[in-house]
Image 1: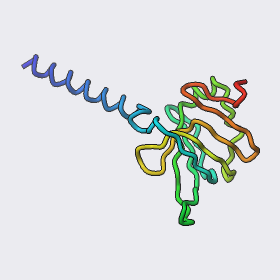
Image 2 (image 1 turned 90 degrees about the vertical axis):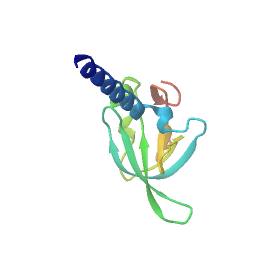
Image 3 (image 1 turned 135 degrees about the vertical axis):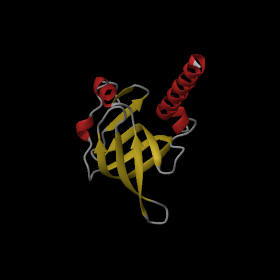
Image 4 (image 1 turned 30 degrees about the horizontal axis):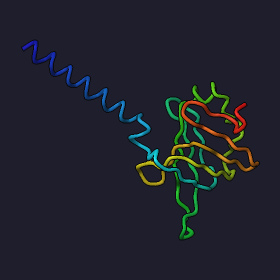
Length: 133
């Protein structure tokens, strides 16, 4: 009986661990084989761990405003990489280039061009100004 209980909890632990890894896996959630660009107005900015994100209103081909989710890395990683969070503002226009999500209207941030022309690059764990400073 003890062996069965031990086996049950082992299988349970492995299953939960697999689900957690899949949840945080960029390749599982985003198509890294191509990039898209989405332009719109920032409606929400959330700097948080384990994932920061933006929400933005984008006008589609038919003139309808739809909400997009822009996902990115952890706040701690972005701070260490000198990602200039203060340049983003709700209500401001932004162009986001990144990997399209496997869900509709989701993109993973690789590059942002802000209202003032500032260009920020976020590749892997390094995020910062285009000039690398």
